[in-house]
Image (cartoon, rainbow, N blue to C red; front, side, top):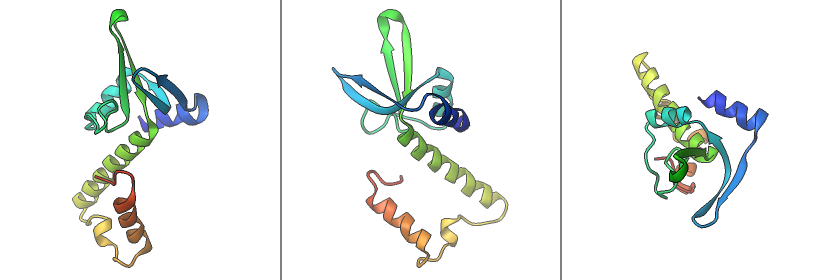
Length: 128
């Protein structure tokens, strides 16, 4: 899923801006198929704090009279959620093969550890 989206953004379509001027405006988005939306929901997507866009960055636009659904994806929210899921997977895998969590094994004076803590504390929404 990640590779398919990467190919479209970097090598094909790029990112677009779309306006729903009576409602709101979205920038830096790509149109996705319903199968990608389904895969994202399988990964644990749910409504986001801003209602219009899900936690993973999906916005569903429905045209009832035409019976059409369009799915748009914001790469920022998608990358943030996918990274969180990949970290959970990696931690679980490391646990199964007898290792601890990566961050648990870092020293508090380690630069990477300090940067992660600063990001968690001062980012727009933090890592949940």
